[in-house]
Image: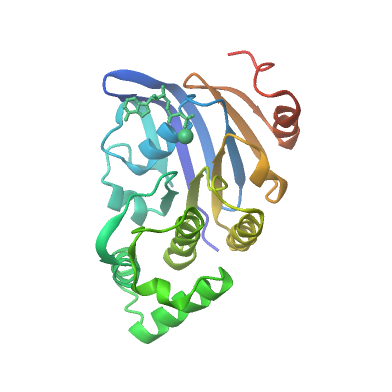
Length: 247
Ligand SMILES: Nc1ncnc2c1ncn2[C@@H]1O[C@H](COP(=O)(O)OP(=O)(O)O)[C@@H](O)[C@H]1O
Ligand SMILES: [Mg+2]
């Protein structure tokens, strides 16, 4: 199994001339589960967006490296090719682009040499949809067009299964999921973890961390990581909130 390492070094990020991240250091290796927690407005989503190269966020300092390759200024497609995947907190709708077309195009872009036959590809997609208890008709719908909250989240997980990234960033994947859907999603994440995928699970609450135990917990406050620990930290947050952590 190949291993992948994402290194975030002293990352500073601004949006609309406002400095949001003020020097973040984080290293995530394949097979590891990290949780990034912190109060609302701490900059958690900003970190996720900056990592995948969202145009609204400007990196003003520091570096993003994957396996030593500098991707700080790379296009999102290049980051995806290096193995990075972000499930957006509020995925956008792309009316007119069918799920099937999107997945096939994205897969071929990522793995141009593989040339998986269409039939095999869609069998793989259907098997994943079956695991996620998604209706087969879903595949002919437009991306996120009229999706319920649960459908959006399932679609994110479907992309992870099909597109096989190395490092996955999940931003509030647990928000808007009912208990059963959360169980399904958690089970799929665990399967992907068993396949040596690394995770950065961004979450305000510890709900998903009951199912998926993080090895590393990082607390972001006002654009800085103010604490690194393990499950004990997320448990304490559940009981006491964020007040006890000094900025
Ligand atoms: N595109 C943007 N333009 C301007 N300000 C932004 C933008 N995105 C986030 N911010 C601001 O940056 C701060 C951190 O936001 P965010 O990363 O969404 O925090 P979190 O995900 O931890 O709740 C907030 O004050 C938010 O208003
Ligand atoms: Mg957020």
